Length: 129
Image (cartoon, rainbow, N blue to C red):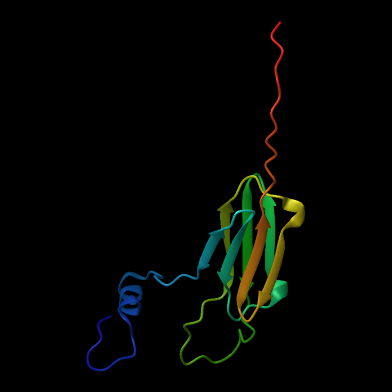
C-alpha cells in the first residue's frame, strides 16, 4: 500500500504495511551500572502495574518478565499503536548474592539492586609432601 499526501504514517508503518512485518516490537530498554559492591539494573516500564513484573535468577541469568495487558480489548479502535503482550529479557550476572537482591518500581522505572558476593582472598601456605 502506498501513501500520497499528508499522512500520520511513519516509515516503519509503511514498511509494516508493505511487507506485513512488525518493526516496532515491544522491548525492554535498560541500563546496567556496575558499582564496587553491586550492580544496578534500571528498566523503563511505563504503564505497567507492579504485579505484572516478575524477576527471577537461575544459572547466572537474571530474568525480567513483564506482561503489558490491554484493558480495553473489545474497544472500537480508530487507531491502535500501543503494543501489548509479554516480554522477557535475560541478563548474565555472576558472583552475585541472590539472597540480597532488591527491586523497586516507581513512576514507570524498575530498579533492581544486585549485590556482588564478597570476594574473600586469604593467603594460605601449602605443605609440599
